[in-house]
Amino acid sequence: MVTIEIQNFGGTTQTSIPVFYSLDGAAPVNETYTGSIAQGATDTYSFTTTVDLSEFTDYVFVAGTELVGDDDTSNDDTTAEVSNLGQDTGVVAITSPVTGVGLTNAEVVTIEIQNFGGTTQTSIPVFYSLDGAAPVNETYTGSIAQGATDTYSFTTTVDLSELTIYVFVAGTELAGDDDTSNDDTTAEVSTFLCQPEANCTLGDGLTLVSN
Image 1 (tube, rainbow, N blue to C red):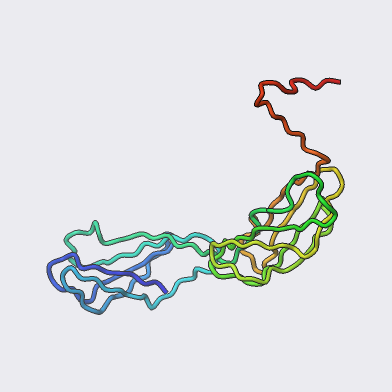
Image 2: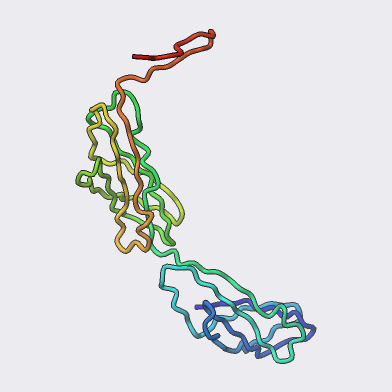
C-alpha cells in the first residue's frame, strides 16, 4: 500500500484533490483524495491501487497532487527511495582462532554474523571450511534483528597444531537468501613455534641476520 501526506499550502480549504504516484518512471496511478484539508493543514491518503515491491532491489517513487488551478506547481511532487532488503545474512568476520604461538589440536572457531535483511532472522545455518576440506555445518539458534550482528562459536573444533598457514572460509546458508554475494568471508591463520621480540630501548639490538 502506498500512503502519502498532502499539505494545503493555499489560503482556502481544499476538497477532492487529484493525487498520483509513479514507480520507477512507469505510468502514474491516479486517484482522488475526497476529504477536506484546511489552510496550512495536512492529511494522509492511502491509494487503493497497491504496488509490487517483492523484488530484492531499490525502488524510486514520485507522488504528488494535480489540483486544478494550482497557483504554485513547484511544490506539487515529492520523490522517495524504497529498498526491499529481503532476507540476507552473512559472516562478516572469523574472530577466532587467530595467528599465534602454540595453537592446539582443538581450537574453537568463532564467527560474526550480520543480518543485512529487513526482518529478524533465527536459526541460521552456518559453516566453516579449513583449507578447502568438507565444510563443518551447524546452526546458529539465536535471533539477529535487522542490521544487527552476533557471534557464534562452533561446537566442532579444529586442529591447528601443525606449523603452517591455514585458510578458513566461513559463511551462512540461509534458505531464501536474496543476496548470496555477502554470505562468506575468508581468513588466514598461522601457527608459529615462537614469536621473537626486539627491545631497542637501550640503543642497541640485532641489526642483521645473514647466512
